[in-house]
Length: 334
Image (cartoon, rainbow, N blue to C red; front, side):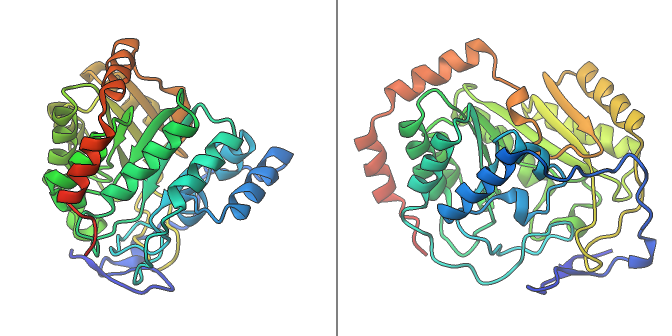
């Protein structure tokens, strides 16, 4: 098995046998349709502020539920990804220029929505020298300025494992640093365009070290792509060995016929069993279920008080002038 090529309109074309796809969704894969007026007001707000959410771009099955609760995961740095992962619904195309006022717009939306917990994610921007790290940094600073008490979670690409780029995000101390492993080691070359299994593990470990442990590290794995149980358990062990304490496990759902096939639908009780195993192995928090995604009920998990206190101490000590000088020495431009 090998990787996939790009088709901006229809998604990646994989070389995996698409006839392996299990097209019959089981009864437990159900998506709730919107009925709460809060959902529509949230959609209107996001449209008015010209923002992008991964909820819609990635066709998240929980967007009706989350938006009805007045929560959303904001996707910054444009709608076009420079990678063509075999599982992802976000389109691959030439990226547009970063919008200078986007960090302020995200901050305004989060304030109007009265969020207690925000998730900020982005497409992979391999066209930028820093992979979009400074844009993350600016967005975090603006959100914190608008809503100082908010828990800030970032779901980031790997920044091509550039330490100085990763440092830009860590320097402004998000509370939760999320980078998804997505799948087991054997399937990574097929499932994840340009990504590397051990590079992702390295990014997670370095993020924790750069923050002197004053950050929660989180990762997620999709199931149903043909992985074996021993491989899932090995991935859990690998994440724990790289200081990851929060894990999400969810069912892979095929966005289009051009994406990777669903090999198997795991039953809800299987997800419960994996959750129990993960907790016994040492993860502090595990969200596991057929419709669980990285940001699903993200606010259900709150960092421990000692971690929060340490992060808040770090935030208070941030010298913005030194940060500006650092950014000048490491420009984000191509």
